Image 1: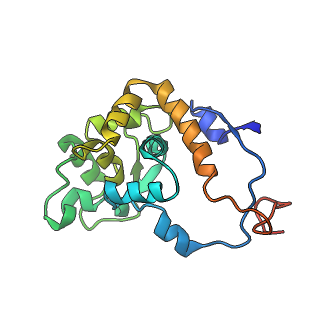
Image 2: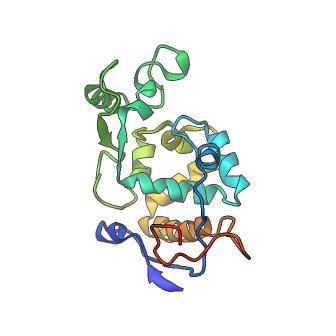
Length: 203
């Protein structure tokens, strides 16, 4: 194993971890598989949890990996339904803080440019920290799949959000472990896949 991390992550104040060596690369992309196994921003917590469980990841992995939304941007088209017509009610998502709702509506007016972008984390958008979780506690999760981690009554993710909001070091430790867990999903073995000579192209 070698010390490694996403370079920007460290510069943004995030954790580092050791990446295990030897994982083979696929020889072909599988867009259909990605579309069915990777959660969309519109899914319910139960659906997202089921997708994680199917690949051996638990609720702690789900919450920790969602914490990557502590930086980055999202287009209006992936969350605007929360602002105007949540679940076809004609009303905004009731879990959205009303002040935050007003701010988002300025960036994403109804019928406006769906490609306009806003920060996933309104408080510290360029830093990797645990503010993502305090945002959820304040009903300021941008994506539906973010806010549902905290706003779904009875969900085991609520306690994990609270723990990570209270301890950045606990979030960092679990994020690193979950990144390793994710890297160990369904490794290719035997004659499947290849060890690439150039990581960006098939041999």
